Length: 340
DNA sequence: GAACCGTGGGA
DNA sequence: TTCCCAAGGTT
Image 1 (tube, rainbow, N blue to C red):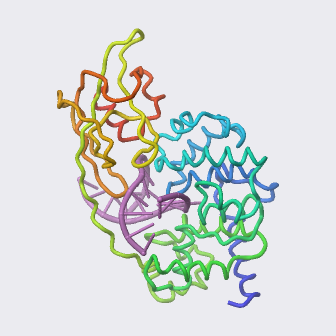
Image 2 (cartoon, rainbow, N blue to C red; image 1 turned 60 degrees about the horizontal axis):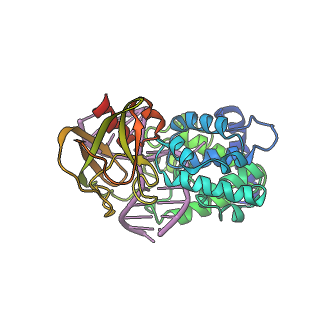
Image 3 (cartoon, rainbow, N blue to C red; image 1 turned 90 degrees about the horizontal axis):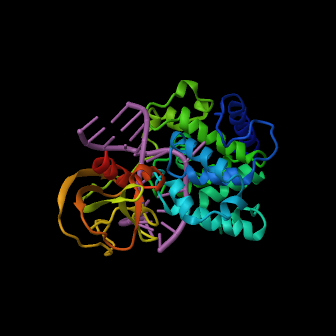
């Protein structure tokens, strides 16, 4: 594509974006002053591998409770972890606190892609997105949407993940010098609403006339994905240990190790199903039921037992305030089973 | 590269 | 029900 062709292509897509771009809580309306980098960063981290619908309530809660990066930097880590509960990929919350403190320490966000990339939790995608959207830098932003749109647009037949190199090169070639942030958001909106994984709406697509994948017959052939591996089934045990406290019934909660599965989150004492060698042994006890839960790379069947004595380091937590404990979904399910 | 790291919604 | 996977990063 020639330089002038690139300009026309980008202008075409941006015109579509100005008319059809989605309204989102973290997105400044067209023509507004530069978006607050804190809100851009926070939303981009929340959106990593996470749907817009899932992020919205968390974004509102975080920005209401911690309106600035300085406020977030001053928050105790465990409060942030609890507020993140249910959103998944909990290393994001740990890195969020680290990055906020680094930013507050240096007096504000760095405004270049390379410097942003140094912050914990900001990889190639997020650093480029924040640099482009919050600071108006030209950056090549490639997420799963862009990957799909570009693979179809140029009919890239090489399978993933090797296809990422040519996809990135093509994305670079079509990224304009001006409004690179809007261009990136336009590509992502296009992927989310038109160029969807299944059943793309090619008749509504502003790029249909340029799409090699469509001309090839079936755009959904791109990108070509490798076969996926079967998910193993793991079995484990956890204990629901309840007693009467001065203010009502309480249950024994532990803090999970900082790394690994559900790292840093509260949970029920367990037998080490997460395979990190840090399990707690315990008597079998009365079986309360079975919780099934799917993780990214394995499924879990967790047997929940009624225990009698506290196991490991932990704390008694009021059962009527269990929703404030910040339990990840697995343990929220177990609690529902035991208390519910 | 490849494994590891969550969750909920849509088809 | 089952499968797929979404504004990825770290090791």
